Length: 328
Image 1 (cartoon, one colour):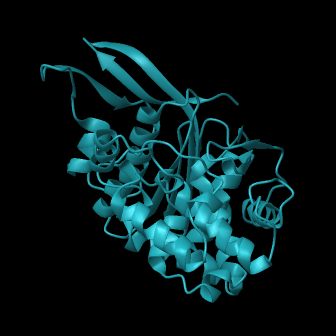
Image 2 (tube, rainbow, N blue to C red; image 1 turned 180 degrees about the vertical axis):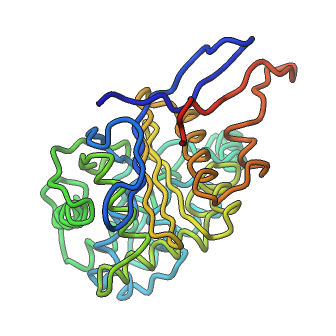
């Protein structure tokens, strides 16, 4: 099966561009709806951070370290590197007796406008806590300490990453077909779009036991702190706020997006084939409308899907549209 037409860009009455991709909506019994190829193998990238955080909670490491819901939200985050994020991650590390040098995610300028301006204007270099994955890595460090393991926690054979792989394969129901190195230097395991949706359905309707309790805590943390999961002006934060706690959504690099819908026990996974963020944000928005979680007229739907595209003079130049048949 080939990728399906999902989102189109129209200009001057002509379809100018098309975002192709794969989408699966699943529940505990399997696929509910799909577009494209459910068996397409992808790297989930940062969309699967709640899976990577499962061993942190399941092992008891989170409770041993006294982590609260803000910490767990940051463990699932691709944050903007604002002070609201960096100060919390730095305090988390300090509470472990660690500091920025113990992270292995690397440093980059933050997306947060205020913090970026502060660094540039002060000629100060960003620290690793500014990395959008620093919360995930603080979680890895917490688990590493709990395991009494070595410092190179991003290595594929490190006990932390072995625990992550076990959790990943268990919740996707698949043996990882391979792995690559993510932007933050941690391994990222491959799965099918269907497997990723299956995993999200498990988070939406957790089973009894330690695994289910961990899944529930992570989703509740994301829903309680959408500003920590991404940041102001970011799609994950704005969509979760707009849905008033009814669903959690999480982006990943190269145009992956997942959704967790507890009230209906649904998991959503999508991958835009061209890797374009615009297409992924429009597609996840369309799916949330399709599932009855957002009204078509809501400003966040207009922002990411239906509002006219404007040029630098403010002139309407085009529009994004759902491709025919998406969603059905």
